[in-house]
Image 1 (cartoon, helix red, strand yellow):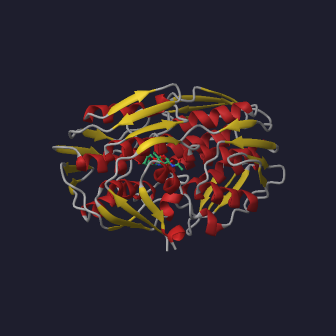
Image 2: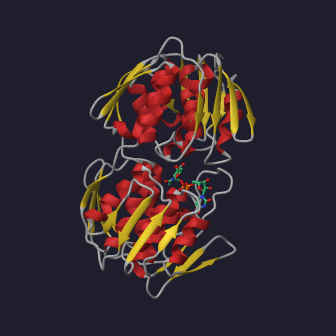
Length: 421
Ligand code: UD1
């Protein structure tokens, strides 16, 4: 049984340390393939998506050894292309980076259907546009397999039609050793794009402009290994910020980059939550009377779609009406049905959820329908009085390092059913 049991109603208090960022770790792990050398990667989160990435990379011929709790030695000298096992690849959206990494290193790439959370259609047209612009031939097979190859990748100006984190990552991976200059226009700004660029530059790449919407990549003939620490997980941090607010507690969240949390902090403050920034920490104190607001998800530096379900839980307990507009993934609202079964009053019209706040959430048996929805259910269970059981918690383990242990240390009555058994 893959369940978490929560007896809610306790304000959370104390300090929690944030782990490394999943969405930076995955591109950087696949980027190590490009180096044909040894990399020492630190601050890796202990989450199942990282373990899955290790399994895929090992099948591709990399050697991976753990050096300490969060640090791994990754040797990509034995890497080959086309060896990633389909049954692993299909479990994780981040597997799409195999194509950019293999193409960039070998000029030849092949991987099965890439999975991930189900937010409706997750097109990859912008990834393919980038590969083709660089001179690759791309073959999309009926079973979802992608094959790509090129005699020589050549830098180009690539103007993305939509801002896509994944396509920006893949374009960087494929172009970092292409001939000449690649310019990515309308690129994603996310901190994990900057982290990937910093990692590759530490390996000898020449990438400028990461963090803006124009990224320039001057192709280099080869890369070398380096030692690099992954940035802290802004979504994990944001989830603990909401945990403090929703339970009326006070949590100091450490190992964060406060700048990455500004859009989340701004929305919490707008509701009446206190957020104090330190150099590498934020302290969040829940208020007595929180009021409803309008939240719109946007690419960075806007409010992240990966914080949408968690924020909705807070909007349920705040006074008055709130609106949550989802601008990135149309099927992000899958959590709503689960929250309704806990007494939430939410109606959805197209991309806007109208949330009637001031409702006491009721303990219930609910499901984690995807990664962030699962985190939202845990937050709802923390505030609802009585026993909440969240099942299919495997989704949550994909992106949250030791969430049960961290919440328990903050005073939550939460048990992993495996441990309880
Ligand atoms: C990544 C993150 C995910 C986060 C999302 C948005 C990883 C492993 N996942 O997902 O946690 O929620 O960024 O911050 O890092 N699109 C296209 N064509 C494409 C690619 C994307 O139309 O070729 C659209 C998508 O449908 C979506 C939008 O662009 O509406 C943004 O998607 P994207 O930024 O690519 O998300 P992912 O990289 O899949």
